[in-house]
Length: 176
Image 1 (cartoon, one colour):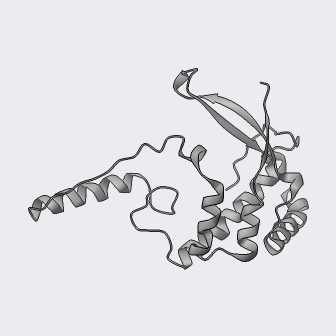
Image 2: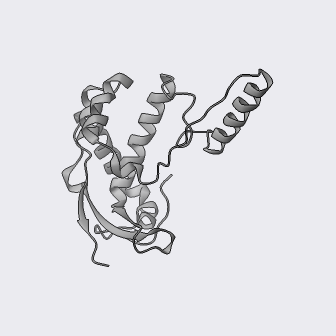
Image 3: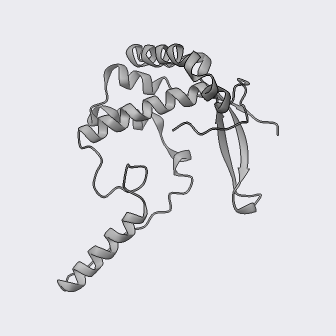
């Protein structure tokens, strides 16, 4: 799951180097991950990233910030993602009408579902409607406190909720 990238972040350690040294650092990384999960505290020294502006569609007015995280942070992020995904699937929490960012369900499946619903409505001589939302830059508008307040509804509380609340990363602007 960890993409091999030769470039490094502020930590001076690339994911390529991390993968090469995996047999030597697996135990300490596992310890750090487990300690974070059990305590509900994300390590402060890993909460840094460099923000690099990236222009979408070669338009200088359409700048999107990209957060360059350390390789170690990416490892913990992946471990956390795996645990959350397992929790959601084992508790059957993903709603069937949500597409993308789900295992074996792509955004293209939304098109097939919409087509099926329209054809079904035509066949039954009923009405069909749909609402489309442009979610470009949606992540930038997330209200983190509101998101955290909804976690208990999905069975995420205690140390798990504390860990997610403590994951906020401190950013440093890139001068590139």
